[in-house]
Image 1 (cartoon, helix red, strand yellow):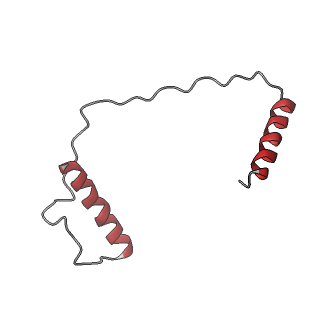
Image 2 (tube, helix red, strand yellow; image 1 turned 90 degrees about the vertical axis):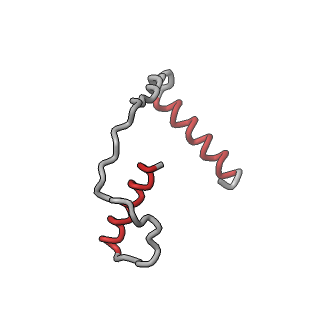
Length: 77
């Protein structure tokens, strides 16, 4: 929670520097925006995307896309 507050303070300071301070709304008083945020303890990884199966010719793929477009237009999308 402390890191979230610190990050919010840093973002607010940057916004104030660019847009001007709206003084009086700083509810994060007492938080040092220059304090370092601790490194995360866990390393996150994301699943790799499956390879694209290229089992259609360009003409077949284009025909399928055009069919989808017609269906979307009929539905008003």
